Image (cartoon, rainbow, N blue to C red; front, side, top):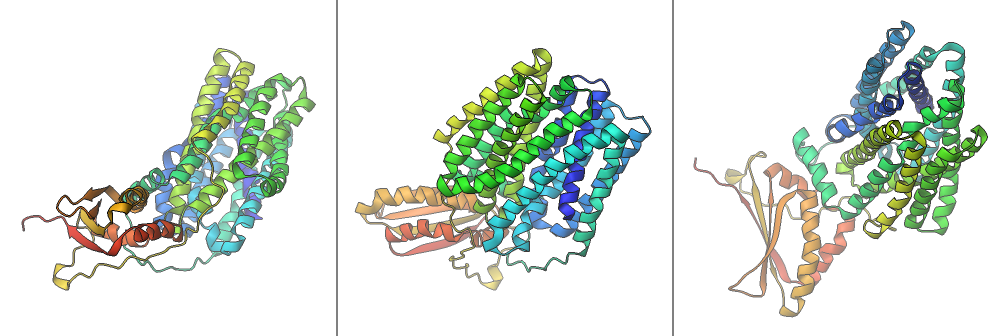
Length: 505
């Protein structure tokens, strides 16, 4: 309930900021920059925020971010009531408010598996999406009415109050303390690990590519809607109604999405939703009146939530616990970065040509992204990403035990392969190499012994001894199939060696 109230306040603030920018006499470009200021922090801060969320206490991080956002929201309300707000100051405060949200969001999403049992996670994720879109439906409508009666400052003041419930709930939550089985990561190392994981997890990369491109193209909806609403009416109520219609469509879309998933594949549902969204964006420019535009926004909202909910759910279920907040932060970086950059492009095009032309172009571009299914198809089944540590830990004598910071570490694994199994062995080892790189290897290779043709040597380098110890805990049950194929194609037990960089003295 506290999250619903907070999200309602956030949407009221978003509507107020966009409407205030229009009221200050700013053109379409500045209006579009309002959304850029709200989304750019996710592009800039999401990745380190995810790393912090996997390293630090997520509860404290969320609490500090909430307090920061209350302070910025108070400043926004005070400057608006005092009539000293300017377009530049509005953009700066919007950026600062969104910065707190950007740092908090990866941890906020990553705690969901801690609050509900694993079997209930899909239902909880769907409920979270419905809650968000109920707020999307209610918040803009309330903002429009409140702004019309009491002014934009009143909407900003409601946003200040909306944070209090979440702060109280988070402050009272007692998160279980979990002992670490591996050395703690540094911020820089954790961030590198996140990028490395996404680069070497092809299915995760495919989802993120699709999401980023679609968000870039579809961002025109929010970037240009305030200008469209202003041409229909001078009242903020119209803008609130349109955003509320989008939110109502999203709630309906969440319900329809579950029924569609039961009948069709994820790829079919997602591609259909993207195609519908593209058509609706183009139709926004052609809607002759407010009732027609409301219908278009309802359908667009349903298509939008279908796509983004399925993409978000895939990312969350594809990422194992140790890197979940970071993978979610990369997802946010890509999607919010797409929204921010797209807002600039469509806003600039709307200022240079016309808003109608920009919307038609954005709709056509969104529709064209369905072709990405040819190179980045979404998975139909998600493997079990629970930890599966089958590696034997290296036996190191006390006198030679390396420090955690020592490195780089060279690990070699010698395999005995019969001539008839060489080709399939090398093919599966390429897949195994991606797993090694995904989980910590900075370099990987497979080599043939010229003196013993039936011997093959796998080698990979890890940056430090601590990172290699973490690598032992990063294999998942879903990886077991690859390792079983390796064992089926090899003879005897592989010979593993650990070597660490040696220096004089």
